Image (tube, rainbow, N blue to C red; front, side, top):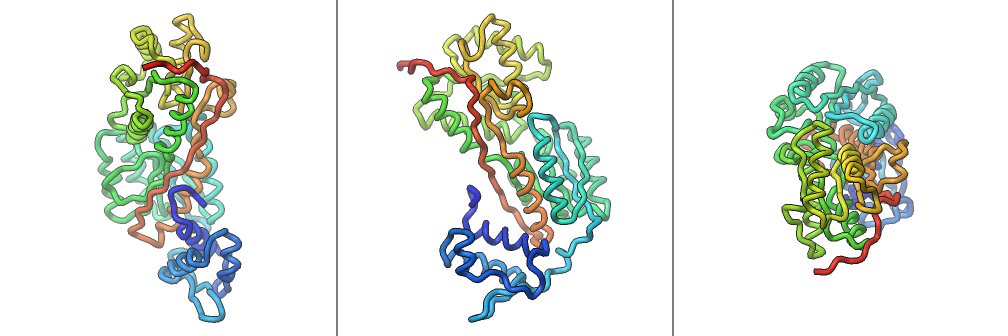
Length: 363
């Protein structure tokens, strides 16, 4: 079963998708309760709850003494093979986005859809144009979107959401809007990472990130960092955070080196993005020092095929799972206009040797 979702809901989702995807035909009997219990490793009560939800949606009929039978699938779910779903990313790179793109395309093909891919390049105006264009095309039936970083919600996104256009957000949840969301469980993986760093003796850890003011994902990561440290009695002081204001690489490298010289107590840097970890590495090298001998580094994301992936500890987000689940949620959204499910996917900590064990620091 998936994290952060009740077992009965997982079973309901699985059976729901099999019914609307045609794996179960109209009038066909699905597996018996004992068979479903054995398949999903759950109790009969859990199975009955999932089946009751399918009955409520009109997808099955339960006949006492005989079993559960698939009803005629609603027309809204009998999809044309030539219909499209749009997938919009605000940023796209080998370190984050490629795996999700492949997953979304593969999952959509399973349901008979073609994919339209667009990149808004972190530009609110471009995002507005893309949303306006795609939502007005009759054969584009829904949009999976990673919203751009911005202080305010995109008015075009709000507009099409209010008219009940099928949307699913990924990576960045927009609180206050009734739109389904699928993304990484930042809190859980950051807690695991902080546990790992503390076990290796690091208490003076710096969180290095772009300015998180207008970025919900970065805010979540920094909050999770602070909460995890506080749970272990480790104070997150002003000097334990470095937010880089600019996008100029050379300026960032110089600022990081300056920060490390001003704060010699720092032993480990936790970077919120892969590109920042590379700037950290260059800043450390510019000081005549190295990883992990002088500084330890751990980061979110990495390029799996790159040589750096073999030497830097990193948090690997489950892009394949995020993409697949986003498609599943959108398919359900077609039949459930007010669906507002929030799904958080677990990530992994990949250890490659960039975090050195040191003696525990006293008081």
